[in-house]
Length: 189
Length: 189
DNA sequence: ACCTGAACACCGTTCAAGT
DNA sequence: ACCTGAACACCGTTCAAGT
Figure 1 (cartoon, rainbow over the protein chains, first blue to last red):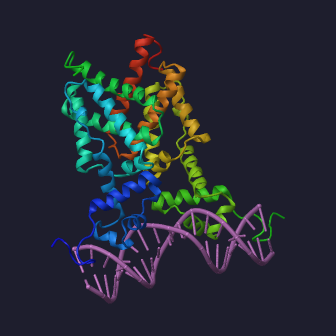
Figure 2 (figure 1 turned 180 degrees about the vertical axis):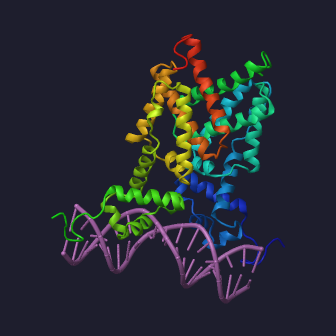
Figure 3 (figure 1 turned 180 degrees about the horizontal axis):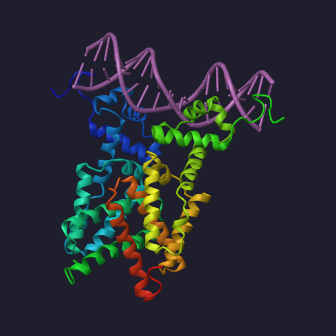
Protein backbone atom coordinates (compact mmCIF):
# COMPACT_ATOMS: atom_id res chain seq x y z
CA UNK A 1 0.00 0.00 0.00
CA UNK A 2 2.52 2.48 1.17
CA UNK A 3 5.02 0.67 -1.01
CA UNK A 4 5.51 2.14 -4.45
CA UNK A 5 7.47 1.18 -7.50
CA UNK A 6 11.13 2.03 -7.00
CA UNK A 7 12.43 4.96 -9.01
CA UNK A 8 8.95 6.27 -9.37
CA UNK A 9 7.94 7.81 -6.07
CA UNK A 10 10.11 9.93 -3.80
CA UNK A 11 12.54 7.79 -1.81
CA UNK A 12 14.13 10.68 0.05
CA UNK A 13 13.26 14.10 1.46
CA UNK A 14 14.75 17.59 1.70
CA UNK A 15 15.51 16.73 5.29
CA UNK A 16 17.53 13.66 4.28
CA UNK A 17 19.62 15.85 1.97
CA UNK A 18 20.21 18.40 4.75
CA UNK A 19 21.06 15.68 7.26
CA UNK A 20 23.69 14.35 4.87
CA UNK A 21 25.02 17.87 4.29
CA UNK A 22 25.24 18.55 8.03
CA UNK A 23 27.01 15.23 8.60
CA UNK A 24 29.57 16.06 5.91
CA UNK A 25 30.07 19.50 7.47
CA UNK A 26 30.67 18.06 10.93
CA UNK A 27 32.89 15.20 9.77
CA UNK A 28 34.86 16.69 6.89
CA UNK A 29 34.48 20.47 6.92
CA UNK A 30 32.78 23.04 4.71
CA UNK A 31 34.80 22.44 1.56
CA UNK A 32 33.67 18.83 1.54
CA UNK A 33 29.97 19.45 1.59
CA UNK A 34 29.48 19.02 -2.13
CA UNK A 35 26.49 18.02 -4.19
CA UNK A 36 28.31 14.90 -5.28
CA UNK A 37 29.31 14.03 -1.73
CA UNK A 38 25.76 14.42 -0.50
CA UNK A 39 24.46 12.30 -3.36
CA UNK A 40 26.92 9.52 -2.59
CA UNK A 41 25.99 9.60 1.10
CA UNK A 42 22.25 9.29 0.49
CA UNK A 43 22.74 6.82 -2.35
CA UNK A 44 21.52 8.66 -5.42
CA UNK A 45 23.12 10.11 -8.52
CA UNK A 46 24.54 13.65 -8.16
CA UNK A 47 21.99 15.27 -10.41
CA UNK A 48 19.08 13.69 -8.52
CA UNK A 49 19.82 16.20 -5.74
CA UNK A 50 18.37 18.85 -8.04
CA UNK A 51 15.00 17.20 -7.54
CA UNK A 52 15.02 18.47 -3.96
CA UNK A 53 16.91 21.78 -4.24
CA UNK A 54 17.29 24.12 -7.22
CA UNK A 55 21.02 24.56 -6.73
CA UNK A 56 23.86 24.25 -4.24
CA UNK A 57 23.21 27.69 -2.74
CA UNK A 58 19.71 26.55 -1.74
CA UNK A 59 21.17 23.50 -0.02
CA UNK A 60 23.58 25.72 1.92
CA UNK A 61 20.74 28.08 2.89
CA UNK A 62 18.87 25.10 4.26
CA UNK A 63 21.99 23.98 6.07
CA UNK A 64 22.34 27.34 7.81
CA UNK A 65 18.73 27.16 8.94
CA UNK A 66 19.35 23.63 10.17
CA UNK A 67 22.28 24.82 12.27
CA UNK A 68 20.43 27.79 13.73
CA UNK A 69 17.51 25.57 14.63
CA UNK A 70 19.83 23.63 16.91
CA UNK A 71 20.77 26.58 19.14
CA UNK A 72 17.31 27.42 20.27
CA UNK A 73 16.63 26.88 23.94
CA UNK A 74 13.92 27.98 26.37
CA UNK A 75 16.39 29.41 28.81
CA UNK A 76 17.31 32.14 26.29
CA UNK A 77 13.81 33.57 26.65
CA UNK A 78 13.20 32.83 30.33
CA UNK A 79 12.36 36.25 31.81
CA UNK A 80 13.46 35.10 35.27
CA UNK A 81 17.11 35.02 34.21
CA UNK A 82 18.84 38.41 33.84
CA UNK A 83 18.96 39.64 30.24
CA UNK A 84 22.74 39.90 30.20
CA UNK A 85 23.03 36.32 31.32
CA UNK A 86 20.69 35.23 28.56
CA UNK A 87 22.81 36.94 25.92
CA UNK A 88 25.96 35.28 27.27
CA UNK A 89 24.25 31.88 27.23
CA UNK A 90 23.13 32.34 23.66
CA UNK A 91 26.61 33.41 22.60
CA UNK A 92 28.19 30.38 24.25
CA UNK A 93 25.68 27.98 22.71
CA UNK A 94 26.01 29.43 19.22
CA UNK A 95 29.78 29.39 19.43
CA UNK A 96 29.80 25.73 20.50
CA UNK A 97 27.49 24.80 17.65
CA UNK A 98 29.62 26.63 15.10
CA UNK A 99 32.89 25.19 16.39
CA UNK A 100 31.40 21.70 16.09
CA UNK A 101 30.97 22.33 12.38
CA UNK A 102 34.23 23.53 10.79
CA UNK A 103 33.65 26.29 8.29
CA UNK A 104 30.03 26.77 9.34
CA UNK A 105 30.64 30.38 10.43
CA UNK A 106 31.66 31.33 6.94
CA UNK A 107 28.45 29.79 5.66
CA UNK A 108 26.46 31.97 8.08
CA UNK A 109 28.48 35.08 7.27
CA UNK A 110 27.86 34.53 3.57
CA UNK A 111 24.16 33.77 4.01
CA UNK A 112 21.35 36.28 4.11
CA UNK A 113 20.23 35.11 7.58
CA UNK A 114 16.60 35.67 6.73
CA UNK A 115 15.17 32.21 7.36
CA UNK A 116 12.70 31.38 10.16
CA UNK A 117 15.36 30.13 12.54
CA UNK A 118 17.60 33.13 11.90
CA UNK A 119 14.68 35.37 12.72
CA UNK A 120 13.98 33.33 15.86
CA UNK A 121 17.50 33.97 17.12
CA UNK A 122 17.15 37.68 16.34
CA UNK A 123 13.82 37.77 18.15
CA UNK A 124 15.44 36.19 21.19
CA UNK A 125 18.07 38.91 21.19
CA UNK A 126 15.49 41.63 20.68
CA UNK A 127 13.57 40.49 23.74
CA UNK A 128 16.69 40.47 25.88
CA UNK A 129 17.62 43.94 24.67
CA UNK A 130 14.13 45.26 25.30
CA UNK A 131 14.44 43.91 28.83
CA UNK A 132 17.68 45.86 29.06
CA UNK A 133 15.67 48.99 28.46
CA UNK A 134 16.49 49.67 24.81
CA UNK A 135 13.86 51.18 22.58
CA UNK A 136 12.54 49.33 19.56
CA UNK A 137 14.79 50.81 16.92
CA UNK A 138 17.84 50.81 19.15
CA UNK A 139 17.21 47.20 20.08
CA UNK A 140 17.07 46.27 16.38
CA UNK A 141 20.40 47.94 15.72
CA UNK A 142 21.86 46.38 18.84
CA UNK A 143 20.65 42.93 17.82
CA UNK A 144 22.46 43.26 14.53
CA UNK A 145 25.56 44.49 16.32
CA UNK A 146 25.50 41.40 18.51
CA UNK A 147 25.17 39.16 15.45
CA UNK A 148 28.21 40.87 14.00
CA UNK A 149 30.10 40.23 17.21
CA UNK A 150 28.99 36.61 17.59
CA UNK A 151 29.83 35.55 14.06
CA UNK A 152 32.91 37.75 13.73
CA UNK A 153 34.48 36.42 16.91
CA UNK A 154 33.99 32.82 15.85
CA UNK A 155 35.29 33.51 12.33
CA UNK A 156 38.38 35.24 13.72
CA UNK A 157 38.84 32.37 16.15
CA UNK A 158 38.58 34.50 19.23
CA UNK A 159 39.78 32.60 22.29
CA UNK A 160 37.05 31.23 24.55
CA UNK A 161 37.98 33.44 27.50
CA UNK A 162 38.04 36.56 25.36
CA UNK A 163 34.53 36.14 24.00
CA UNK A 164 32.66 37.07 27.22
CA UNK A 165 35.04 39.98 27.77
CA UNK A 166 34.35 41.50 24.37
CA UNK A 167 30.66 40.76 24.74
CA UNK A 168 30.55 42.64 28.02
CA UNK A 169 32.26 45.63 26.39
CA UNK A 170 29.65 45.65 23.64
CA UNK A 171 26.82 45.29 26.16
CA UNK A 172 28.32 48.06 28.28
CA UNK A 173 28.32 50.32 25.24
CA UNK A 174 24.70 49.46 24.57
CA UNK A 175 23.47 50.00 28.11
CA UNK A 176 25.41 53.25 28.39
CA UNK A 177 23.03 54.34 25.67
CA UNK A 178 19.93 53.71 27.78
CA UNK A 179 21.24 54.92 31.12
CA UNK A 180 21.91 58.38 29.71
CA UNK A 181 18.47 58.54 28.16
CA UNK A 182 16.23 56.71 30.60
CA UNK A 183 17.91 56.61 34.01
CA UNK A 184 17.04 53.64 36.22
CA UNK A 185 14.81 51.81 33.80
CA UNK A 186 14.60 48.02 34.40
CA UNK A 187 18.33 47.38 34.24
CA UNK A 188 18.89 43.75 35.26
CA UNK A 189 15.77 41.99 34.10
CA UNK B 1 72.30 42.94 -21.82
CA UNK B 2 69.23 42.89 -19.67
CA UNK B 3 67.58 40.74 -22.31
CA UNK B 4 67.58 37.05 -21.59
CA UNK B 5 66.54 33.99 -23.50
CA UNK B 6 62.75 33.57 -23.31
CA UNK B 7 61.47 30.71 -21.19
CA UNK B 8 64.75 30.61 -19.34
CA UNK B 9 64.81 33.59 -16.99
CA UNK B 10 61.92 34.87 -14.92
CA UNK B 11 59.51 36.89 -17.02
CA UNK B 12 57.15 37.70 -14.18
CA UNK B 13 57.16 38.36 -10.44
CA UNK B 14 55.11 37.49 -7.35
CA UNK B 15 53.78 41.04 -7.60
CA UNK B 16 52.53 40.47 -11.16
CA UNK B 17 50.61 37.41 -9.95
CA UNK B 18 49.08 39.35 -7.06
CA UNK B 19 48.18 42.27 -9.33
CA UNK B 20 46.33 39.88 -11.61
CA UNK B 21 44.61 38.27 -8.64
CA UNK B 22 43.53 41.64 -7.27
CA UNK B 23 42.23 42.71 -10.68
CA UNK B 24 40.19 39.51 -10.95
CA UNK B 25 38.84 40.10 -7.44
CA UNK B 26 37.78 43.66 -8.23
CA UNK B 27 36.33 42.87 -11.64
CA UNK B 28 34.76 39.45 -11.21
CA UNK B 29 34.54 38.64 -7.50
CA UNK B 30 36.22 36.18 -5.16
CA UNK B 31 34.98 33.00 -6.80
CA UNK B 32 36.66 34.03 -10.02
CA UNK B 33 40.13 34.52 -8.67
CA UNK B 34 41.41 31.13 -9.74
CA UNK B 35 44.89 29.87 -10.51
CA UNK B 36 43.85 29.30 -14.10
CA UNK B 37 42.30 32.74 -14.41
CA UNK B 38 45.43 34.40 -13.06
CA UNK B 39 47.60 32.37 -15.42
CA UNK B 40 45.52 33.38 -18.43
CA UNK B 41 45.65 37.03 -17.40
CA UNK B 42 49.43 37.14 -17.06
CA UNK B 43 49.93 34.94 -20.10
CA UNK B 44 51.43 31.74 -18.72
CA UNK B 45 50.28 28.16 -18.32
CA UNK B 46 48.28 27.45 -15.12
CA UNK B 47 50.95 25.30 -13.52
CA UNK B 48 53.62 27.98 -14.04
CA UNK B 49 51.94 29.91 -11.23
CA UNK B 50 53.38 27.31 -8.87
CA UNK B 51 56.81 28.72 -9.67
CA UNK B 52 55.85 31.84 -7.72
CA UNK B 53 53.55 30.48 -5.00
CA UNK B 54 53.42 27.00 -3.44
CA UNK B 55 49.64 26.77 -3.68
CA UNK B 56 46.45 28.78 -4.03
CA UNK B 57 46.22 29.48 -0.30
CA UNK B 58 49.57 31.28 -0.48
CA UNK B 59 48.30 33.42 -3.35
CA UNK B 60 45.24 34.36 -1.30
CA UNK B 61 47.40 35.16 1.72
CA UNK B 62 49.41 37.50 -0.46
CA UNK B 63 46.22 38.99 -1.80
CA UNK B 64 44.99 39.78 1.71
CA UNK B 65 48.26 41.50 2.49
CA UNK B 66 47.98 43.43 -0.75
CA UNK B 67 44.54 44.69 0.23
CA UNK B 68 45.54 45.66 3.75
CA UNK B 69 48.54 47.52 2.39
CA UNK B 70 46.15 49.80 0.54
CA UNK B 71 44.31 51.07 3.63
CA UNK B 72 47.31 52.51 5.36
CA UNK B 73 47.31 56.26 5.72
CA UNK B 74 49.24 58.75 7.81
CA UNK B 75 46.12 60.38 9.19
CA UNK B 76 45.32 57.18 11.10
CA UNK B 77 48.38 57.73 13.25
CA UNK B 78 48.33 61.51 13.43
CA UNK B 79 48.30 62.25 17.18
CA UNK B 80 46.74 65.66 16.56
CA UNK B 81 43.45 64.08 15.51
CA UNK B 82 41.30 62.63 18.33
CA UNK B 83 41.71 58.88 18.75
CA UNK B 84 38.01 58.17 18.24
CA UNK B 85 38.09 60.07 14.97
CA UNK B 86 41.09 58.04 13.85
CA UNK B 87 39.29 54.76 14.51
CA UNK B 88 36.26 55.95 12.58
CA UNK B 89 38.45 57.00 9.65
CA UNK B 90 40.19 53.65 9.58
CA UNK B 91 36.86 51.81 9.69
CA UNK B 92 35.48 53.85 6.80
CA UNK B 93 38.61 53.36 4.70
CA UNK B 94 38.77 49.63 5.32
CA UNK B 95 35.08 49.23 4.56
CA UNK B 96 35.43 51.11 1.26
CA UNK B 97 38.40 48.99 0.25
CA UNK B 98 36.57 45.76 1.05
CA UNK B 99 33.37 46.81 -0.73
CA UNK B 100 35.43 47.60 -3.82
CA UNK B 101 36.51 43.97 -3.91
CA UNK B 102 33.50 41.64 -3.72
CA UNK B 103 34.11 38.68 -1.47
CA UNK B 104 37.32 40.16 -0.07
CA UNK B 105 35.93 40.24 3.49
CA UNK B 106 35.51 36.50 3.48
CA UNK B 107 39.12 36.16 2.39
CA UNK B 108 40.20 38.28 5.36
CA UNK B 109 37.91 36.44 7.77
CA UNK B 110 39.35 33.13 6.62
CA UNK B 111 42.96 34.31 6.72
CA UNK B 112 45.27 34.26 9.71
CA UNK B 113 45.82 38.03 9.54
CA UNK B 114 49.43 37.69 10.63
CA UNK B 115 51.22 39.35 7.74
CA UNK B 116 53.15 42.63 8.01
CA UNK B 117 50.29 44.78 6.77
CA UNK B 118 47.78 43.09 9.05
CA UNK B 119 50.10 43.82 11.97
CA UNK B 120 50.45 47.41 10.81
CA UNK B 121 46.70 47.90 10.96
CA UNK B 122 46.60 46.33 14.41
CA UNK B 123 49.43 48.58 15.55
CA UNK B 124 47.50 51.61 14.33
CA UNK B 125 44.52 50.54 16.40
CA UNK B 126 46.69 49.81 19.42
CA UNK B 127 48.10 53.31 19.33
CA UNK B 128 44.66 54.88 19.12
CA UNK B 129 43.44 52.75 22.01
CA UNK B 130 46.47 53.59 24.12
CA UNK B 131 45.68 57.24 23.48
CA UNK B 132 42.17 56.48 24.73
CA UNK B 133 43.75 55.49 28.01
CA UNK B 134 43.58 51.70 27.75
CA UNK B 135 46.35 49.63 29.28
CA UNK B 136 48.53 47.39 27.16
CA UNK B 137 46.65 44.14 27.59
CA UNK B 138 43.24 45.78 27.43
CA UNK B 139 44.23 47.63 24.26
CA UNK B 140 45.27 44.33 22.67
CA UNK B 141 41.92 42.76 23.46
CA UNK B 142 40.13 45.90 22.31
CA UNK B 143 42.07 45.94 19.03
CA UNK B 144 40.94 42.39 18.33
CA UNK B 145 37.38 43.32 19.23
CA UNK B 146 37.49 46.16 16.72
CA UNK B 147 38.78 43.82 14.02
CA UNK B 148 35.87 41.53 14.75
CA UNK B 149 33.49 44.46 14.42
CA UNK B 150 35.08 45.86 11.24
CA UNK B 151 35.14 42.60 9.34
CA UNK B 152 31.90 41.26 10.76
CA UNK B 153 29.95 44.36 9.83
CA UNK B 154 31.20 44.29 6.26
CA UNK B 155 30.56 40.55 5.94
CA UNK B 156 27.01 40.96 7.24
CA UNK B 157 26.54 43.88 4.86
CA UNK B 158 25.82 46.38 7.59
CA UNK B 159 24.34 49.56 6.15
CA UNK B 160 26.76 52.48 5.88
CA UNK B 161 24.91 54.64 8.39
CA UNK B 162 24.76 51.84 10.96
CA UNK B 163 28.51 51.22 10.99
CA UNK B 164 29.50 54.38 12.91
CA UNK B 165 26.63 53.83 15.34
CA UNK B 166 27.74 50.31 16.25
CA UNK B 167 31.34 51.43 16.34
CA UNK B 168 30.47 54.15 18.85
CA UNK B 169 28.67 51.62 21.04
CA UNK B 170 31.75 49.40 21.03
CA UNK B 171 34.03 52.34 21.75
CA UNK B 172 31.71 53.49 24.54
CA UNK B 173 31.97 50.05 26.10
CA UNK B 174 35.74 50.16 25.86
CA UNK B 175 36.12 53.63 27.34
CA UNK B 176 33.66 52.83 30.12
CA UNK B 177 36.34 50.34 31.08
CA UNK B 178 39.03 53.01 31.52
CA UNK B 179 36.89 55.72 33.11
CA UNK B 180 36.01 53.45 36.03
CA UNK B 181 39.63 52.49 36.54
CA UNK B 182 41.59 55.63 35.74
CA UNK B 183 39.29 58.66 36.00
CA UNK B 184 40.15 61.60 33.75
CA UNK B 185 43.09 60.07 31.95
CA UNK B 186 43.75 61.57 28.47
CA UNK B 187 40.31 60.97 27.07
CA UNK B 188 40.20 62.74 23.72
CA UNK B 189 43.75 62.37 22.46
C1' DA C 1 7.70 13.14 -10.23
C1' DC C 2 11.99 11.04 -9.44
C1' DC C 3 15.86 8.82 -11.02
C1' DT C 4 20.10 7.44 -14.13
C1' DG C 5 24.05 7.92 -17.51
C1' DA C 6 26.58 10.84 -20.04
C1' DA C 7 28.37 15.00 -20.94
C1' DC C 8 29.98 20.07 -20.48
C1' DA C 9 32.67 23.48 -18.68
C1' DC C 10 35.17 24.19 -15.19
C1' DC C 11 38.60 23.61 -10.81
C1' DG C 12 43.66 22.82 -8.14
C1' DT C 13 47.59 20.27 -8.56
C1' DT C 14 51.27 16.92 -10.25
C1' DC C 15 54.49 14.98 -13.49
C1' DA C 16 57.64 14.57 -17.27
C1' DA C 17 59.93 17.09 -20.40
C1' DG C 18 62.01 21.12 -22.65
C1' DT C 19 65.25 25.70 -22.32
C1' DA D 1 65.01 28.35 -12.58
C1' DC D 2 61.06 28.89 -15.33
C1' DC D 3 58.05 27.28 -18.57
C1' DT D 4 54.78 23.94 -21.39
C1' DG D 5 51.59 19.95 -22.43
C1' DA D 6 49.20 16.41 -20.67
C1' DA D 7 47.00 14.28 -17.21
C1' DC D 8 44.53 13.22 -12.58
C1' DA D 9 41.00 13.69 -9.50
C1' DC D 10 37.76 16.48 -8.60
C1' DC D 11 33.63 20.26 -8.96
C1' DG D 12 28.34 22.20 -10.20
C1' DT D 13 25.06 21.78 -13.54
C1' DT D 14 22.37 20.36 -17.82
C1' DC D 15 20.26 17.21 -21.03
C1' DA D 16 18.08 13.17 -22.85
C1' DA D 17 16.09 9.18 -21.55
C1' DG D 18 13.82 5.71 -18.60
C1' DT D 19 9.90 4.38 -14.84
